[in-house]
Length: 137
Image (cartoon, rainbow, N blue to C red; front, side, top):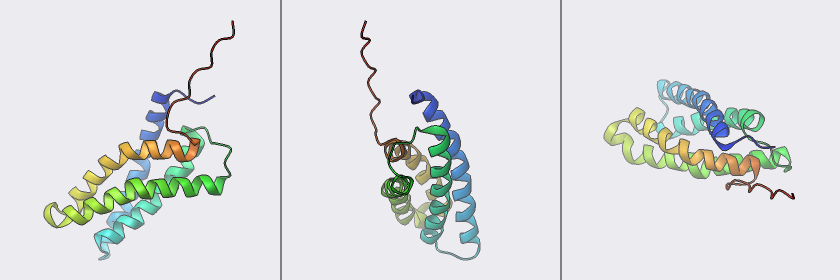
């Protein structure tokens, strides 16, 4: 039986803090060695998405019967479409104006909300809550 939505959202948020910390650490490391903000963003996102999939598929969401490689591909593709695209656009548009770190922070905030829906779809195979079955009594 799936966990209640508020519990899944809380777990997703806690894992999000961990994968965001990893994302930011990798982003910072790549920037520190002279990497471009967009390259640093891609590297940080890649590290974070691997951690996020592993943790969310074991602790947050009930895995769909879809084979693991396909679930990961859906997770990474939906994450790329949502969070990587969002963060890349924000970094490209705002890094020169407000700096790469504030742009990264804004991208993380927007991506977190969209990422929950994408993760739920890719791991559980659905976005909308399941309806409760009618009581046969």
